Length: 448
Ligand SMILES: Cc1cc2nc3c(=O)[nH]c(=O)nc-3n(C[C@H](O)[C@H](O)[C@H](O)COP(=O)(O)OP(=O)(O)OC[C@H]3O[C@@H](n4cnc5c(N)ncnc54)[C@H](O)[C@@H]3O)c2cc1C
Image (cartoon, rainbow, N blue to C red; front, side):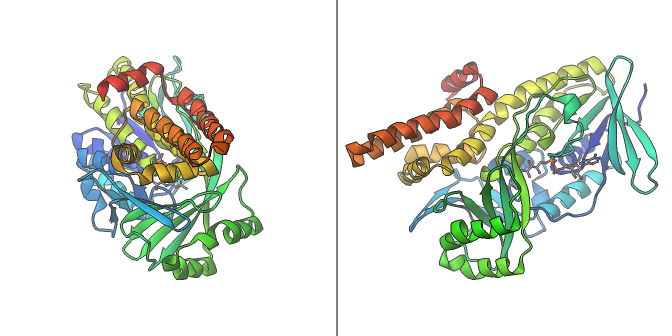
């Protein structure tokens, strides 16, 4: 069937709008569908790691970070008890803290200014298939008229976010909720280290904060478990595990934010990518793959996926050969696995580490030593080092360091030292199994 579009994109969120903004100026005809093009207030995607900023710059979209009070972030700080450390990002790289809603509107405007993009306001309903079960587009309910209509294209990108309706037919993914994040905005808040992401380790579960505008700091508080926190549990959690550990400089704005209420709560998922490769469709963004947001790795993965998918698609002379499009989709799924494994493993492994007293103390001490190990670790967190060998090496160095440190303190700590090693193994094993192959780890060793 001859179609009006080259690509139909379901979901004009971070993934869908960004790939449209990147491909449209290259003359690709795109139908961009979303049921809401208005600015939303969200607590997601507000810290861009340097890897995400770099990807935007490489796609010539770096200018989209300008003009809406986004703040540059120079590194990370960890706070435990009275101790504090900072680790700068690798030289000449920076992250950005921002309002996700404002940023998304800029990306959408950039995509929609191209004549080759058609904005469709509607809710995508069902993927359309031909007799050969190839996907040939999507049906949708138009917002204005409630009419059911359809769009046809040789390629449909499903980027409809973490509640994706299309995941079922395009993947075997298993989604688990690891915890919830409770989001608050702290106004005129003095963080211990300006221009830094902060991870607070004093309580039983972590909380983090970073600037999102000149006068606002986002505070994200982890609430463990897979059950939505009820109001009274949430209050108990804040009273016992957060309020006592808020630094003095932040206390006034924290108390004011608590008084004003306005908490937003979001589930944190882990979902490894397990795509079913079907002709005519490809998944992008949270619809395909999710990790714990503790490390702010989501958009690094999304933008890097966009670069990989786009590079494959742009290598085709035209969008008229379904077999060739299929080959490109296969290549994208293969390449993205390598590119994103470190981000996925680190996010969930670090969440495991920071919810474990012994490992949490070990990570603090390990990074306090500075030097090459701290530098390599921050480069992995920043999304700049994707080498699997580096990640596995740093994880085991950390566990061994923690165990050795305990024994050095006192030999009676031997059982604790053994526990650290065991816990580290329990954390990393399922993640490595989902995300890595042995060949990829060892090829990383030779690529160092
Ligand atoms: C609490 C939390 C904090 C996070 N913080 C960070 C962070 O600091 N840094 C970071 O890099 N990552 C972070 N992430 C992850 C990051 O936000 C996501 O990876 C990213 O937003 C995914 O983009 P997406 O386009 O896949 O989904 P979304 O941005 O959610 O976009 C999905 C779009 O699809 C549309 N849509 C859905 N269904 C339909 C339908 N049927 N028809 C039409 N349109 C539809 C929606 O309206 C939406 O516009 C965080 C995640 C969470 C949960």
